[in-house]
Length: 539
Ligand code: AMP
Image (cartoon, rainbow, N blue to C red; front, side):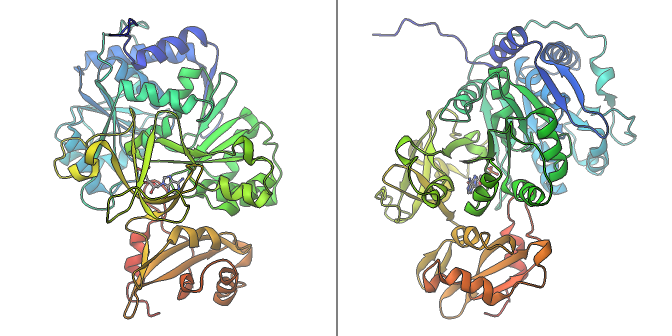
């Protein structure tokens, strides 16, 4: 017997209609060099429809890829809806990628039109001869930018001016592609993840769910995570579904600007990688801001150290530690105390909050022994590979035939290694490739990093495996001291601190002090760079 409910397509057109009709007066604010740019969802909606007309006129049709090379701004947000709602596919390019990767990605996706922020034009100009599929560049900016080599090109405002402010959206299949995003890919070529309307719709429900980020109309959402990194973790989409006010950082994500924006715009929830929050915490130790409206910082993309969660809590700012991947849209799990954990000691509570936590409704997981393929017991000790599935988890990469094993038997093999406690809460131990294998036993680089970052004189720490004649590999700790502790922290001090906290054989064989941890294009620790640098380091 079949259910008798409507077969209502889950598309972004629904969110667009909802937010423009029910919340037209809510604001969208973008940081600029000077005064922030402000307008309402009503203004935004008219411009989204003008943009859709302009794209159509420029020859963009069903399924065509429209690339963006841009910061988090209101124009980018307009593209987030205009492109998919008219039936095309929004392809957000990571502005920090190396030139050859960008060229590969644009060609792989065969992008037809590219929207480029004015100040980023020089980067694209260098590549333009290698981008044969791009037929039009649209330049976004408030100052006139030289676009000499990008041809043909047009200014965004000119592009949409004079277009009608209403658009009759086409009927779309909910499974049609809405957006795509390439994984940062540490090995081989980057791989395209293609989101459908349905997956974004359901992911937005997951982000908005009370067991997710619990977004409501009362929220003021400030996604610092770039709109080219897994759709800014779904916040721009989910905010429109909820009717939340949106604040966008433009190209400004330094701690001072972040603190001021939170204060001035009365931000309730913001999101970004831990590095941003490490910077904010350092600032808050020196200067006062009224951040009392902030109910949550969503931190993810790499492990949020427990010391960071504790540090921000001292300022009454709760971090929600979340885990996900480009392939999982990305929100898959997050850590929140359960009702029966509320009277645990503060230390136990922080330890729980530093986990990657519980999968959100809609996502299923299992942790599987890397050799036997059997599920590991939920004993919080046995390592295994984390695998997930759900309606917003990728089942394949774009045009890719090599990665079938990544999507074995209906599960995404994440490449993350985890343990599970008896509550079913996940804790990531490492990436499979970052674990340090010493004498046949695994050492978690992530756990060591988290502990070292708890040392009061340490700003950041990155642990890598170094080849070792006897043990195969041994850990090396690369440590960045806090600015006011430069030259005041010693290797012995770090090792003594760890001695009290880890098994003896986990102790790094050496500690080197560095100025900064190299970061990837999406702000994660770039262990590859350190591994190459310290390959010959003698332990
Ligand atoms: P990306 O596709 O660039 O978002 O990268 C996804 C990867 O980032 C995951 O597979 C994890 O290795 C890592 N990651 C994301 N969130 C976390 C987190 N909360 N803790 C530790 N690692 C994380």
